[in-house]
Image 1: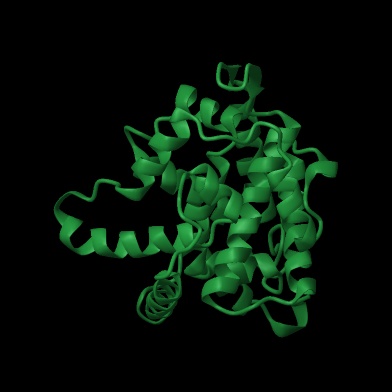
Image 2: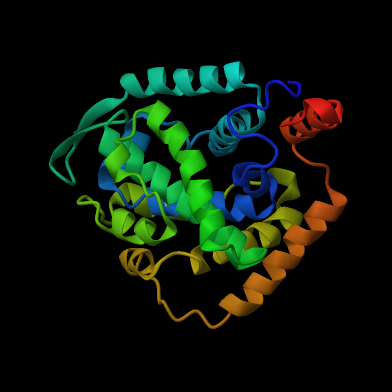
Length: 272
């Protein structure tokens, strides 16, 4: 990457700012919990994904896709999107819970998955870092919509403003709490950490519960959770502090470092 190829977004984009922030981790967990409430989406995961046998592998593959699309040179970002499109073409079947067929490449389903993701990234950033102006949030949605469209999502089902997110997510017809969603919730809440469990389990519990705190009321209701969560403010402050410590003490993602190094190495006269 050099100054002539800043990828799909570039260093001045909202996507660069939000996706490199540590709050995005909590946003990713929230997105998974929201996406699992589409019975068709969850059926595709149950039938085709290895998330139960290899949860961390799936997590890192998803993270790698997001970071590649956000920070890699244009050709590599587009190749990653095309690879996912080809995978989606092979994922289809029948969901007995909704009584409907499903396909991972369904434009409506892709739009729902996308809306859950961007809504969650915005919720985590505004909840743990700082509020965003509507113009900033809407610009982020416009940037990310380009990725969703390339993946095959229906344009009319994608949120183009922050105000559209909640109606589009809650208006999906197959929302419900399937057995797959219950298992996913349990698996995400208590992943396996092996020998590092004594250290990582308390941290994970904080981040997971913070993600749950940030869920919209309808999602809490479907999961059978009490919307009155008195410890939510304390958890939010603790999670925000943890994210700040991570920003100060841990290195940035390798893709972020490479992209920034290439950008800062470009002569000022060539920067757009």
